[in-house]
Length: 221
Image 1 (cartoon, helix red, strand yellow):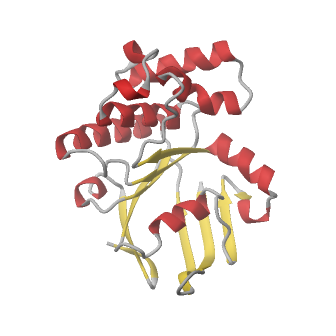
Image 2 (cartoon, rainbow, N blue to C red):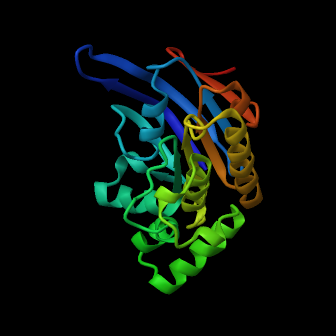
């Protein structure tokens, strides 16, 4: 499903440094891998590289057999819309859209018509227990509810890969546990591969594998 082959990335700024060095890694269909590591080690950069939001200096990144490092920007954008669902710590819901419209957005970006997109959005909202809130504004929701909407949005277009960046970091422990349960349940039911970046040992324990990102690459935790 996902293969990184000798990927390196240097970040520039006040202190230019080699952040990711000759990293190789594979994620299989339906597999859930958690990535941990100290702050600043490159976990979010790793997700950005996998998503094609950033380019490696060297190496190849194959997503469903396609090397995204060889694609033009518009081709990467289309592949990302088709193949990847994102769940972020900060939710990133659009305040001027209803909950259903937020969830339907990936489908609309892929060219689906409004009726079909809306029907699918309500279907997925029902799976996360929020069908009755479809017409509400994100501002009317709690943090846990907003994250459930974000999960629905990530799943709505049936992507083969979910990228999750600290998805429970802004939630209290009880809400975080419930949201994580829901995310894992939905991912496993659909046999979706998931790469989760987290500082939480509790979240990481739900994964099939836990990897630690270090200066020497990804190593088993």
